[in-house]
Length: 164
Image (cartoon, rainbow, N blue to C red; front, side, top):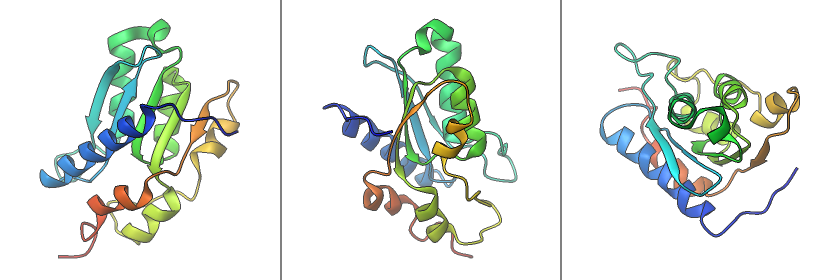
């Protein structure tokens, strides 16, 4: 299903990319996400925090952003919400978006493009499972828009996943 972008969507998506760039500057996996309410207000932002040895592999940026949003606004506040993310949500994060009530996902870098950047890096064993396929198995519809701005989103990953 295709949905139209509104005037602010690309701004929010670029903010998720900036969050990913800040994560990289801190030395953690370069992913960023934010949740925007139906009223257009940012209710949660998050960087990735899954980098070993101190990170938690369940703390992807999308997972933290949707959990933070749900805690901030509750189930009713999640109605009409959008998850903006620098990379396509993995199966785990798509599940979290589904269960927290996200209604729309807008993402930059596709899982396929991410895999081209990360290769077989042990810290990012990607699934070959688009978020649209995960959402298609659910009982409620989630609109998905992406990939968009892939070249911009890829910059934070360039050189990050190479062996040192």
